[in-house]
Image (cartoon, rainbow, N blue to C red; front, side, top):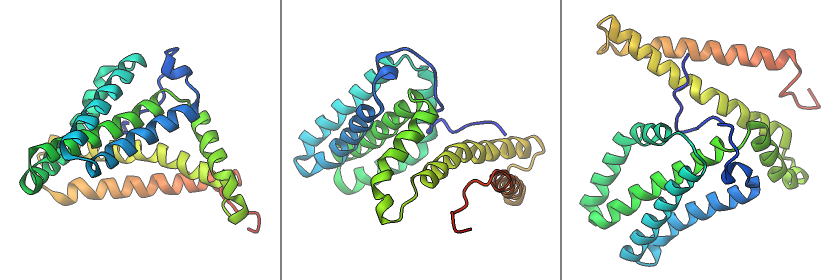
Length: 214
């Protein structure tokens, strides 16, 4: 299946300042982006809209500094287009155009910032960072290695599932069955279950994902 998960960008090798930035710094900047976008409405609607717009511009600028392909940014926004239009329409109706802009800009800024993080950080480094973040919780029973494995499987599975939907949609359209719900959903279910079983068997064969008591 093709990979279509442009909301979860794969790593793109590079030597830009963003690529060379430490993972914890990127994580703090991503957290700051999310906090600013979510907390600014509590201060003032117009001030919050200005803050969110500024954050969005900074995120787009960071995308350029990282020298990432601009088509990834466009496709990420295009994949969210329907969702963003619905959210904007509802917010405009309930709270006015300023709030609608602020909510949409916040969503786009946060998603693109996450995209930049994953696109400029090797997967191994990202998983090691997540494992280190969870490690202090080991005293409460958390398993950092299992957590990292779960995230790795998620990052690998999302592109497969989205690609499965796209492939089945194209195949159904080619056969004139684009309006047939069964023809567009059943192959996706079958391929996804098959992928999950194959992944589980591969993990079991390597003794991965099992607890020490198993």
